[in-house]
Structures are given as C-alpha cells and as structure tokens.
Length: 342
Image (tube, rainbow, N blue to C red; front, side, top):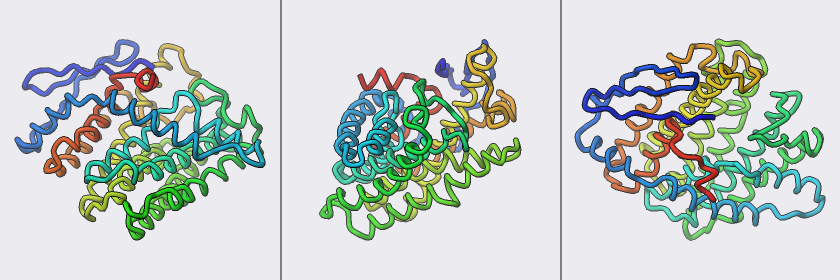
C-alpha cells in the first residue's frame, strides 16, 4: 500500500492528502479549539522520532514474546501459536501503545511488558479466528498464508483458544508485584476481558458475519476501536492513572483504532481502483460504503479527536509525545514499521 502523504500548509490549516489513483481531496484541519499551550505541545511532538522509538520497543517485545511461548507438549499447538504471534511483518502497535501510555504516567516498562505481550497474544488469537473459513475466510494474512492454511482449521482454532488464556496468565505470572498493585492488575485483566468479549471484539465479528453496509461503523468500532482503547487504557491502569485520565485514554485509544481502520480502507480502495486487490470484502469498508472523500474527512475528524484528548495530558510534558506521534502515523503512514525494526 502506498502511504498517505500530508502536505502541511501555512496558517490556513488546509491539508491536501494525495490518494492512490491520483485522488486529491482538500479537508480542513481545525486547530481552533486548542489552547496555545496544547498547540505548542503538538508542535513539539511532531519532531518526536517515533520510528526509532517503535523499532527499539519492537526488538524487546519480540524477544519477550519468543520467551513467553516456548514449544512444549503438544508441540503442534505451540508451533501454530508461534507462527502467528511471531510472524514477520507484525507491527506490534497494541503493545507499543500500552507501553507508551504506561510511561506517560511515570510507569516502568518492566511493569508494562507482560501486559503488552498479552495484548499481542490476544490480538493474534483474534486474527487467527477471523481468518477461518467460517468467519472471514481469508487464506492469507500480511502477505503470508493464514494460520489455518498452514496448520489446518482444527489446529488454528486450538491455537487461538490457547492464546487467549495464555495472555491473561502471562499478566498474572509475569507482572512484578512491587511495580503494579494487585487492584490495578485486576482492572487490567477486566479491561482486556471486556474488550475481547461479547460486547467488544466478538460483537464486531458477529456483525461482520451478518453483513450490511449500515453496520460498517459499528463493526470497525468493535473490531478495531476496542483494541486501541484496551491498549491505551491498560497502560494507564498499570501506571496508576486517575479515573478521569483513564477515560481520556479510553477515548484516545478508540479514536486511534478507528483512524487506523478508516485509513486502511482508503488505501485499499485505491488499490482496488488500480486492480491490486480482488474486492473480497465488499460492503465492509468505510471508504466503499461512504465514499473516499467522506472517509478522508472521517479520518481527519478522528485524528483531531485523538489529539484533543491528549491535550489534557500536556502537564506530563514530553512523555506524551509518543502518543501524539501514534495519531499522525495512523493517519499518514510516514514510514514502514517493518523497515524501522530492521
């Protein structure tokens, strides 16, 4: 996919976003509601080196995930689990966001790593199940064969089933008790259970199966917004953030998750125009259902909403910079995460 390219123009705050197939749509980038101090924080955050920060964390996360899922008996299940969790090309966005949110409030990476890894396990499990023939029926994932294509449907189901509880167990067994109080850890577990359950990601997949263009926004909110929300909230909970700060993180994470999904839809729509994809997910794309111009406007609104939530954390100074940078990356895809990680 070709990345977004954002042209930052003078004081008029007008952005031109080139899309595939030479599509250009002008949209307004509103900063009128932001205070001078928050605008200054946003400006400073734009210089943050997210690429290096992300790459550094990915190396550590990959190592810890490798250690967390050693091959045991029965080896077939563990090999299938490792195939998806340790797959090349995985961006590790949920764990990186979790760690960034934890560090925002002065939390330690050592406190966040177990939950960060659990988020990736849960995320991988949901994708394994989503790809199954009885669900989205996707034979490939990130350009590689899906789990069930390699290991069979039966083993893929078992691998996903095993990854969900392993994530919860990893949080309980590996989080340092001297860094995270037990009540905070219980809230993290409850948050993760809520996000993947019948009112969260499972609800999104149900509606995805049911079909219908009217449900596309709700599907994306549940399938993508939930993971972003959970990642940010869990990081804040680990660090002991106040309840009002947790709610601000909740709105931020959901906006970023939805932003990522809408931008993916826009880019995929461009590839369809160029003949790069087969249009299999017809009716499931925000850009396809509402049109590319409206999708770009929606993406801009989500970007602004996410940043408005972060404006409330300006007292934390530069520790909020990574979270601001995540928003811009979700919108413009200014670098390749695979290349960043080496």
